[in-house]
Image (cartoon, rainbow over all chains, first blue to last red; front, top):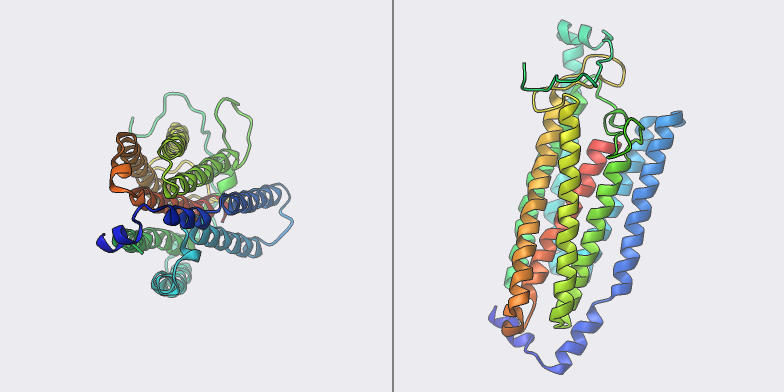
Length: 147
Length: 204
């Protein structure tokens, strides 16, 4: 607190410096980038829903890359991390790399569990092959918790 | 870097790992299931247009509201750096409005899904391949969007306190608007989490 107070004592020179560090043009640019990515994702999702023109797992890769791009812009521009000193950026970025391992390990675990169940759990296997009739959603007076 | 701001970054890191754990457990369960409901089928309603189906339109509106309120929050931070009390108040007010709009949308979505029979432990939706779906889908959906919604709610409370403090001139007296910047970091983090929730539940 004290260090900061001394560095941000209200002198006109400091105000000038602070103003120049805030760039409302960059904020709006970030906003448009985020909006465009979201609209693009939406269009791709709806076109896929209507036509199934593309393998879904490749599409999922596109969605993940788009999401990471959005996350980068929010963190770097809105949260201002891109303009902080390098040590702080590393303090945040290096622990966040743990997520890479988490994702690989747990997703791997999940698909292994799926394979095991399909091979050894007869009930699960039959369930995954049995089609059910569509449920009518618009029934009046039938609400969860009321039975 | 001021001490409080650094600590806010560390808090957000820990919160990121909490959300990460939720989303990764969702991913694990989804990978261990043979099929999953189609989000385009589940999230296709919009208020006041009746039976017409518009897949993902409503949730995109919610995303837009949250990104927009992030922009107004950055503007509040910028106004704080320029020591402009009136502008900080204006932008904080708009940010709070955006947060409330988002919460309102989420309340509508939850009510709508509840009316369709979805809740914790109950899943009326079929898997995309026509097989019986488990309740994992609704359990994860309500838990994670609920946890995120609770973060938005806390953010609105924090922003309201900041607005009141700005209005009283507290930050004018201390000579800086760093509290606005810390509240801003939290608010952007909530937006950041929503980006991931949006992808995991509505797109994938």
